[in-house]
Length: 114
Image 1: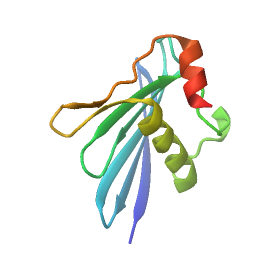
Image 2: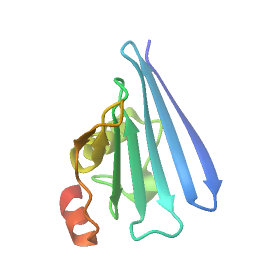
Image 3: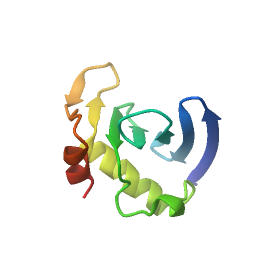
């Protein structure tokens, strides 16, 4: 039986919502952080079942209004995790780069989010 659990953390870096999904394949983790002092509003990170890690910085969360994100709604989690994997920088479990997606311009990040 799959489960989804969300926790919230507030500190000087910002507000972070961590969602852990446990399924037959193992565990994956999605973190969505609203940044206190960063060129981008959101930092999204996703650790896949196989240990691959992705990080994406953006000004928009795709398809979800900022005040409607629900960390325990699997459809919201899936949409954000998919965008993070598609648009973010990725590392394999051992640290090897599997996807390079760093672009510091807000315009480029907004284009990726759409």
